[in-house]
Image (cartoon, rainbow, N blue to C red):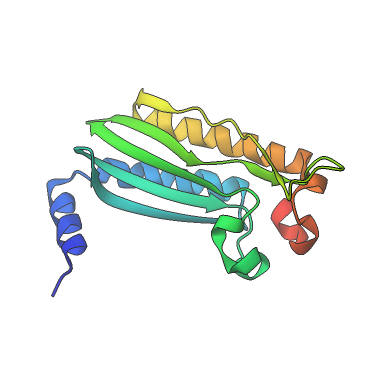
Length: 165
């Protein structure tokens, strides 16, 4: 017996509503893996949210959860989360729900860590090319930030060097 979620996804797939979103997700995954081949990305598609089909995904640069505090992806120093809403044929909106690069706090600070902004701009309306280009550009920028601040990444000594090449 299928669950409600499986039935809902079957309906969305049969109407073709997920095709564009699935194609975008695949392109985003390829762009991410190009910059961070040792990282992780988890995607979910088929949510009907606020009247539109949506996709959500989270990503990070440390692909082995055993190296993360508590074994949780949310403890990745470059953990990010995004939502992509399909508003119509080839019309998408992208929102960033969580972002930042965890770095060591300033000397003498009471903070455990500090977050450096990574600068993803929300897309209020755009076609699939605009969305995939924005993510490709963002992943390149993020890789540059990681490389430039590698020595300052929070708990850097816990992670294998392979994640920073």
